[in-house]
Image 1 (cartoon, rainbow, N blue to C red):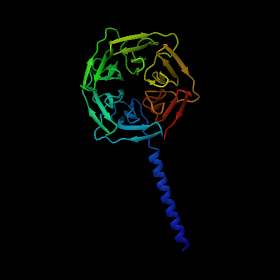
Image 2: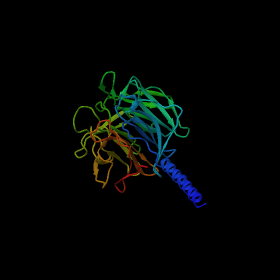
Image 3: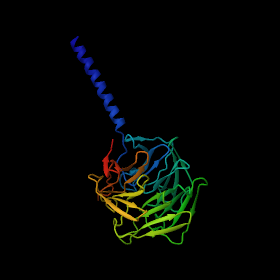
Image 4: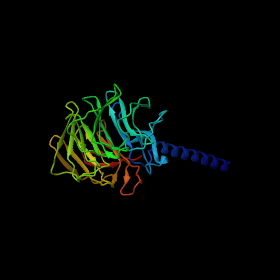
Length: 338
């Protein structure tokens, strides 16, 4: 009888352990380490949406990730989504949120490197929809949604066919599913893997940095869709030119934030104020480390910047899988990985 009771207790204990481990796995679910992925913040759903990325050598199909994930910035949880179809692509594209259409817009080069595909993601129904193709088969182009004009603006990229940097400005209208070459007479040099964000208070798309094989110092550029004009902002103090970084606009502070970058990364945190054309380097006690090829977004409701992944220093095709949160008010980075 005593042995039977011991056996029952052992079985019950084993079941409890299995249940706890299962629950831990569900709660601790997180995307695998990667770089060159795309992220955007869906304001209506209050979720950070991430798509794709690379987990190794970029031309190896086994290392081209096509997963869709969502991140809740209020409780720091990742959820893998299960759309019926996914865009594909090799990474190195970009995503933005069209607030009027309530759709995430993705611009990514196809797996065979021949087509710049455009896709829309609906977080409410967990569905991807193929839209009109973009202009060129490009890598490293950047897009940002202009809320005032209801247009997704694209600048730069590296055209694979002609093997050159692109200096063209394109606008995408979701309502008509059309891309338009804006052809402004004055514009920044061609580049890719630059930082780009939309400042709604100034109603300007802001571009800084990028790989263009030119000078080490790059000025800030802004684009006004209404007048189809670019304006250059020179500054005396600020970060040196870099690429493989991200620009994020913080609504509450009315500032743009960037982290890391360069060819093999760094661990600098900077803010930029377009109103005064000034940069400020922040010195948080902790940070995500020396990374590049990461992606980050501003989760407005939580008032935090969310950063995920990136290349681990100078180790090519070696990526990290940490999730970090940045609080500008307190100047603190926190590792919030599940």
